[in-house]
Image 1 (cartoon, rainbow, N blue to C red):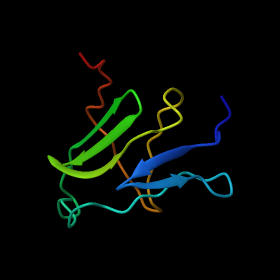
Image 2: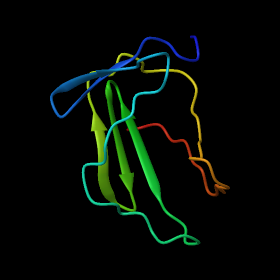
Image 3: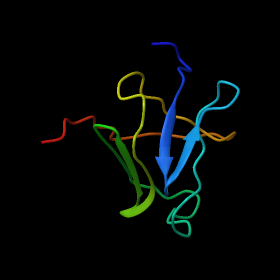
Image 4: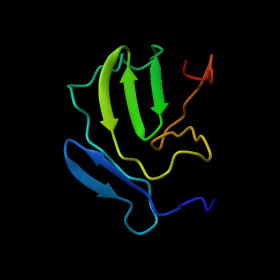
Length: 94
């Protein structure tokens, strides 16, 4: 699969698609639930068939349905600054 395959996902009833071969950006559902700088955050990202849900410190922040890509690379990113990751687990859903 190409790194930037044609992608679409439905978020709050609106179809989103990648533009100019970039990743789809979706706004947060809630006020930020991230901890202050220097403290560890917990992210749970669930991919169940064509539904993707992202929880930040237990708060649902993003959820998309009807995703057209359901397999491929898993990426970790930083938004321009140093970042550290720990305790990363990939588990199958029951």
